Amino acid sequence: MTALGWIVAASLAGGILSVCAAAFALVVRAAWIPALVSFAVGTLLGASFLEVIPHAFEHGEPHAVALSILGGILVFFLLEKLLLWRHSHDHDEHSHTHDHGRSGALIVVGDTIHNFLDGILIAAAFLQSTQLGIITAIAIVAHEIPQEVGDFVILLNSGYSKTKAFVLNMLSSCATLVGGVLGYYSLQVIEGWTPVLLGIVGASMIYVAVADLIPGLHRRPELRATLSQSLLIGLGIGSIALVRVLLGDLH
Image 1 (cartoon, one colour):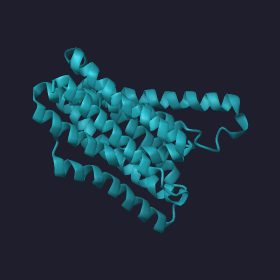
Image 2 (cartoon, one colour; image 1 turned 120 degrees about the horizontal axis):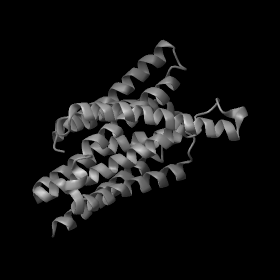
Image 3 (spheres, helix red, strand yellow; image 1 turned 180 degrees about the vertical axis):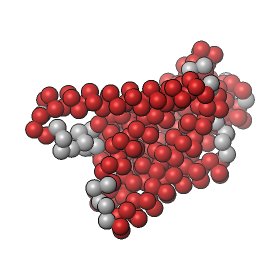
C-alpha cells in the first residue's frame, strides 16, 4: 500500500472510532450530564496542557506559539460576544438565561481544527515510515476517544439535540481525512503553521473549559458537589495522562 493509501486508511479509522465514541455518548441519561460536564472540563484542560500546547512549543517558536494562544483566547472571546449579541438581538428577553449553543459552537470549531491537525500529523508520520505512521495513528485515536465523549457532552449541555450533536461530531471527524490528504500533498507548506494552529486549538479548549463550563459548576457551591466536581475533573485530566503514559508521546 502506498503512503497516501495508509494515510487515508488511518484517517478514516480515526474518524470512525471518533463517531463510535459519540455513539456511545448517545446513551447517556440527562441526569448524568452535570457529572459528565465536570469530566469534560478535565479532558479539555488535560488535552490542552498535557498534549496540545506542549506539542506546539516543542515544534514551534515559543513566542509565536504563546502569541497564538493569547490571540486564540481573544478571538474566541470576541466570537462568543458576537454569538451573544446576535442572540440578544433576535431574542432579547432570553439572552442571558441559557447557553444557546455558544460552548457547542466553539468546541465544534476547535475540534474540527484539532482533527484537521491530527490528519496532518498522521500524514507526516507515514511519510517517514509506515510503522511510525501506524503507531502515531493509534496514539492519536486513543487520545481522541475520551475527548470526543467529552465534546459530545458539551454539545448536549449547550442545548443541541442528540441527533444534531452526533451529526456535527461526524462532520468534524471528516476533517482528519481532509488534513491527511492535504498534508500528504503540501506538508512542507502546512508544517510551518502547525504549531500556531495547535496554539489556537489549545486556546479554544482552555476558553471553553474556563469561561463556559466551569462557571456552570459554580452554581452548586455545596461541599459534596464541589468534591464530586473536583474528582471528575481530576479523572478527566487523568484519562488524558493515562493515554500518554500507556502509549507515549508519539505524535
